Length: 394
Image 1 (cartoon, rainbow, N blue to C red):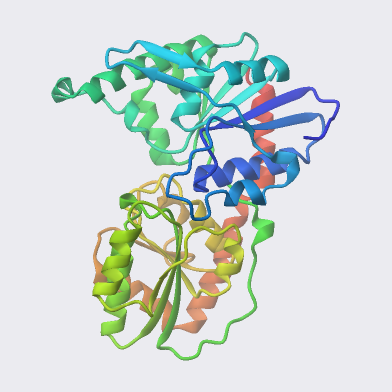
Image 2: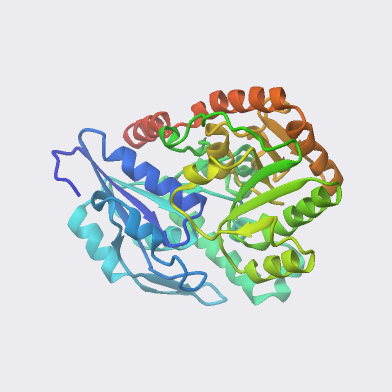
């Protein structure tokens, strides 16, 4: 990290960056932008170096990051018994805090929350990034008394809320859906500390691509980005492609991401004889290059807290067809930058794709509007707001 005369020392804390999902990509972009700001010193801290989905591309994100933001690994762990008693091993993180003496700790994801709130430091400002509606915070119901996990979660939630109150914790909410969820789950004195803070991207990495010449109206190039996990619902997109083939089109769907559902999705592709139409490409750090191949971005998540990949696609001039994942609703200006499909109806989803594909003028107009729309999610303005909150909140 570069040495500067700083009056604001910030830790961006996250469980791990190995998976390269939306939260991880946002943290990296925040760190890159903060490096350019005067009088600020920034550290990226991770609590483990675990690999989630095997060895393929396991160190992609660490290798590609500039030296100035290489993550500081502080292996730490905090475990709770089902009745709420905790046992911690946070010596490395505690030592890092002692040496760096941060003014701000901005935490992402649950393990980072627990570790950073275990030993509160007087004078430090604590910020929680609400990346989704954490199951830990859902309302406790009578039937949960039959589950040791739910009972444990109840104690952990109470423990965290006590720490939040003690530290005057503030919260950045990435969507209205998440804002509403935590507004109900947190006590009033904390819910008033929730700040609406939609995610952002580095829009300079993207931009309108050169006009593509379609081979024919029958050829459709689709792109989807997301971890191959159940909630991302990629099997739905495979069935969408199958329907397009049945209608006589020649679709090509490229899926970026990896995860526990890869084998299931690949098996479905093979059983439907779609190996020439659907490609599982794994992780990549050059999303902008893959976008150049596409005509339309498709997104099938049944629950999407925000949708960074949707904004990336829009910033590249791609109109979007997506399912209603609640948190992504605010990203779709219906009929202007994309279409939102409320039900998992393959025929309706296919219809929206063909509405775009079969009208080149509409495709281009919506792509141009998508670029304009994405600009309000640029990382520079986002970090301006972050710094203002870091400095102004007491």
